[in-house]
Amino acid sequence: MAQTKKTYSSWILVLTVGLGTLLNPLNSSMISVALTRMQQDFDLTFADASWLISIFYLASAVGQPVMGKLSDMFGPKRMFLAGLVTVAAASLLAPFSPNFIFLLACRALQAIGSSTLFPSGMSIVRSSITKGQGQALAWLSIFATTSSAFGPSVGGFLIDSWDWPSIFFVNFPFIILSFTMAIFILPDKGRGKFELRRIDFTGIALFIIAVVGLILFLLSLDSEINGWAFILFLAFSIAFYYYEKRRKEPFMDVKGLKNNPNVSLIYLQFTIINLVYYCYFFGVPTFLQQAKQYSPGETGLIMLALAGSGVILSPLAGRLIDRHGPKPALITGSALLFIGTALLLTLQETSSLLWLLVVLAVLGISNGFNNISMQSALYGHVAPEETGTASGLFQTSRYLGAILSSSLLGLAFHSHLDIQHFHYVAWICLLFSLFVILLSIRLPNSGG
Image 1 (tube, rainbow, N blue to C red):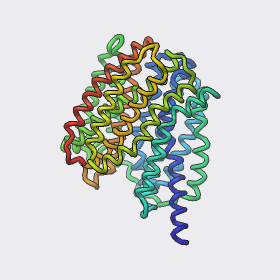
Image 2 (cartoon, one colour; image 1 turned 90 degrees about the vertical axis):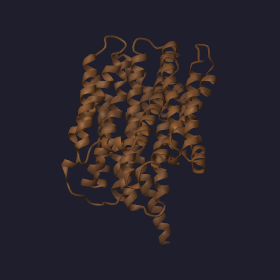
Image 3 (cartoon, rainbow, N blue to C red; image 1 turned 90 degrees about the horizontal axis):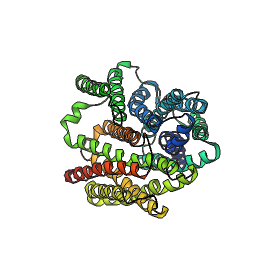
Image 4 (cartoon, rainbow, N blue to C red; image 1 turned 45 degrees about the vertical axis):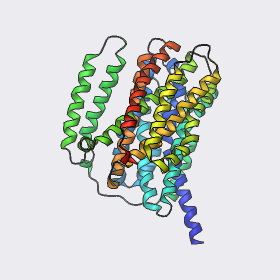
């Protein structure tokens, strides 16, 4: 009987945490089908609207490591509840945004709140569940990947029924249920020592300014090039590197990256993979709605081919990795990314919907292979005690890829959106995909 109670409690605890942690990937993905409506309501160019993507991922990149340290200081349960309240506040205010700047602030706040949930939730699970911990962590991963994969479909149906504010209101059932369960179910592990100096505020500020400078520079390439933005990016990137190199507890361990080139190249490769993937994840819904005149609901259904195929085929990639290590799976995923991108170039105005679904499925399968094989390759090149830091930088690589993809789309779709401009994006992504294949081939076999 005691064993039955323990299993039941563990399951409920994972469900409580999972309902919270799915909010970040859900809100990062639903926006893909909402951009067109938001662009129309606020009278924006696509380049302007792309900031709704960039600011969410930039706030997430900064928020996750900071909130992880605050979780250690104030206690994971308190931070988990605070994160839910923050997401609720942002989701309540966003639909009533009087202007675009206010909406951007709500998206940033939403990202910070949802970024609190993963590190605090993981801390609770790892300290509370000892038997079957791997299975518990796997279920949390399923919550995240599933909500991200099906976010565009959920968002599409909601927007068809209640317009773009609905993608913010849909958070409340998850927030209310997770908050109520968290109060009674999550253990209070107490709080640690409050050490504000552990948070690298200077490094974070330098990082944010450098990334914003890069975005502004990239978005200016189609008109008058913003040289000051490039200088800003360059100057603050150099300052960031030298400052982080000297800091004892840095926001980003640049010294460790320099000393482990294989790991650095894995982060670079994962950034490029996500740059290419998110160009399609955010670009295809916009293309379908603005160039092909599909409704948000129809667009969400079409996007299932991209997102759903990756989720379904991921277990196959896992089995391949278990038998042969990450390299064969990574080469397979990289090759499929290149093939899928090349197939996108065959799409024309008269192409059938069935052919588009086939192409999206190929790209989705590549993402399923790439995600799990890149993570496996990373852990094969870092010491066990460095897993936490490595995982954080791995997520940062994902966020940087997404940010760069939104800038590329903003540049390509700034003035007009048609099949020709979509092909421009595909040609650039084809070159990046070729580079990903080369990086996969050079990956040492010892990563397995």
